[in-house]
Length: 235
Image (cartoon, rainbow, N blue to C red; front, side, top):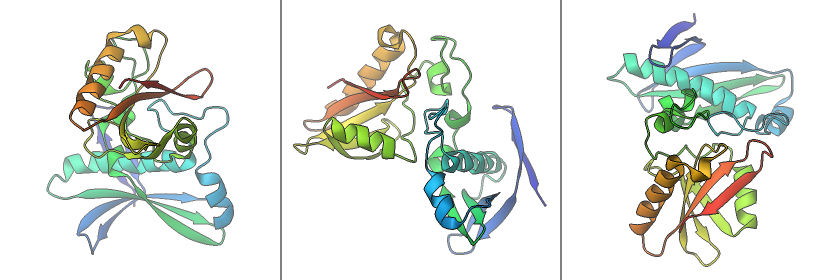
């Protein structure tokens, strides 16, 4: 039986495909069930490939089947966690192929309002997350599937870029000489480089970099027209 859940703040409602209990970790697990006529090998080839016509979602994540499914599961986690406050709720996606099945964990970082709240920002007029609407300098979460970002960043001298857990910046990596670099992923729109939001992002990155020894800082965004990754060195 499907379980109905909703979030009154986001005004989203859905039905969970299933709810399980992790006997090892003692956690509730939201289950998102998917099927495909492809074999597992074909599924794996297609699952992380961004859409050719719309490669990036409004929240900044690559538009892949894997991300779409993970976001669906993560909303169930977000909604159920609000009700079951005394328990840890996690999410999993189960894909049944023609010759087997595979289980994926939905990242806990997606179970946040910022993943789903993509209304227009009152200050800048762009599609933006709640953090932008609230006037803060919070950055977007680093993408789940990073191949497109990794390839571009390697070309311009940045390596070993990984999501940063503190939430103050999007990711941390290194330059060729081993110097650490902080990355802030942002929504970009016409006039962003001249906006107060851009100034807040730069100040936030500089402040975070200042706390580390010889640390650089880079803004990152995906250009909406060219669909290309763009960077701006702040420190």
